[in-house]
Image 1 (cartoon, rainbow over the protein chains, first blue to last red):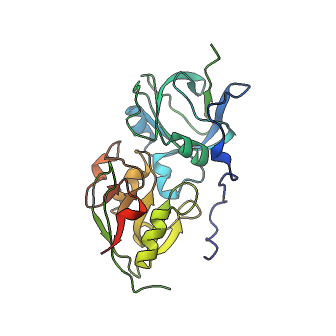
Image 2: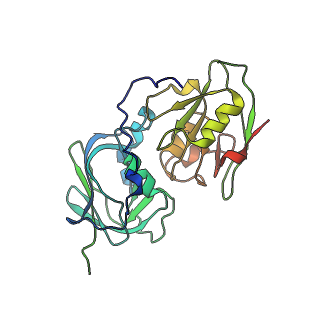
Image 3: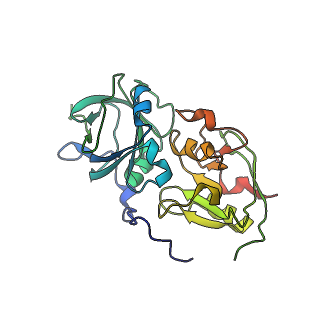
Length: 151
Length: 124
């Protein structure tokens, strides 16, 4: 097979990156930390419906309108119910996590964050959090996933 | 080696929705556009092998919608699941999703099939 055309860096994680034991709690409690680098045109409309779609910068261009692009500094593990997703410092408690969030978030920086309070994720790519108004995020905004402190 | 291209029929898998889709690449739409994490998915590879289409990794570079014969995605339900149908690109989801999310209105049986495994792709 020929070399794919250059266009964006190949940022696929090193082999084994998706195999980490995601149930481990990181020492500092930070499972994931990232900074928003671009806000898609449709994000305000999605936010009004209680939805934010995150994707790292490898997202194909045709998805950019639908996504908050971001550049993660910590990629440790995905959330579990009871953890907190923090948007510019505002905490939202996680209520459910879909089945494909692991491969999506670790490999692609991708998740659909829904503030619907579902205790069963309606779609496999969803991370559901408590009902609340999601903040308006801009370039430079932060998103962190924090493990619930040990009981 | 471009063309002649063959047809395949892609049927929904267990728990899946939509389709079946009949896909035949052409000289102007030759690409089997794979937008799945972790390289070319076996479903995309099988469609390419059977049709003679050209596999293309959407995470490595971008292709215009009008070059795409079929998009293969592993979407968990919100973004990728709607983008390609919205542009009238036939779309195959590896995951068994049904229309949902803000783009649900674009996801129709004639453009979308889900829950697809390599065995659900057959010569037509």
